[in-house]
Length: 248
Image (tube, rainbow, N blue to C red):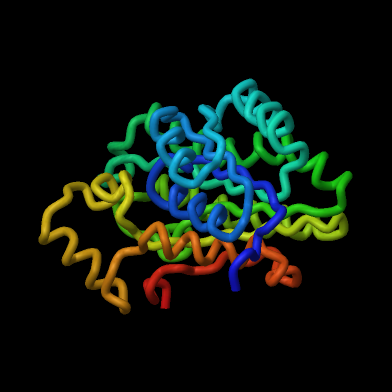
């Protein structure tokens, strides 16, 4: 059913590549006005041009940068109906004790603190409007952790719990909060997840996914459109596994 997001405005962080680009494209196809926000300004601009959206450079872990993103959205859209917290990073696959403190801090800042900063920035207006949809991109790693990605796993478990806690608190204000849990996909993070991108490592990863393929940006786009549309008006606090059966 085309036009499911017609008249809606949306921000997609990390929208310049990977799953975020897939979500931004799907939103635009369904009629939304989309701000493609990314720390990589060239990537954001390229995707924004493809979908007739707006590009904005942002560091999602920096409160000043997030406030600037909100101001740009207000100037272009007025109100923001949909916020997708998609920007994410990982540490390189390896023993948990070998991950440096700087790597740990970076993962927690981008995967967790960014959700906190976005909430502080955008939720007051959504509460006042008595409407809004927030989508956090978590991971199957937060449900069924893989070895050697311990702190990334933990960050995504945090994101799932935060989603449920936000959903309960914001439900009386008409604001819905959901998450999607992708399995490893064809994104810039894939090599870091696997440790090395070789045919053997790909085969090993794929053997754990019953449907036999990696998640694609389009898969995330389809799921995100549904959860952020009015079709899902009775759905909040869900962490939807879009994982080809990985978590069964």
